[in-house]
Image (cartoon, rainbow, N blue to C red):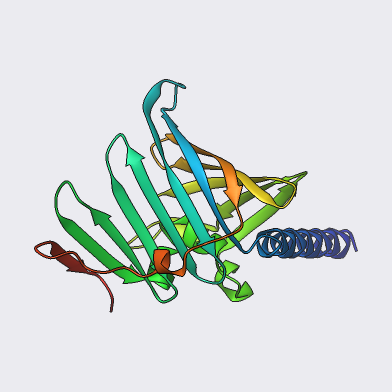
Length: 208
């Protein structure tokens, strides 16, 4: 009888946890959908496991849900990430190289690719916990092992009203990257989500 009671408690706890996770995930998706298109500026700070500042940067972020975003870092070095609805393009002008992968591939490495997803099935490999206006996002254990384990350990997305205010990422080395967003605008140029391959660059095509 004791074993049955303990088993029942375990199942109840698991079910409650799963329901809470589903509710938090749905709330996060609804929060993103509330402001499905916007452009903002961001400031970036990278700190190590001891809290020491490693890098600072600036840039702009534009989003159009579903499946599109433009992440343009302007300082300290220029780089560009464009999700065009199907693929994700990463351009590094300094080394004149472009990498491209599918959005499905990118979700394991890019929390932003996950946040612009409207398909709930894309979130099945992540646990989500709502804490007020913030959401903790953690990859499930199966994403942390295997041939290509996720380098992301935790992400925190925080909102002010309908606006995404910050995104904080913790990687496998213990480094934390904080993006603080401001100057939100609701108008977005559709051309920001079209990537045109520059002439003379090396293309690293990782699509299957």
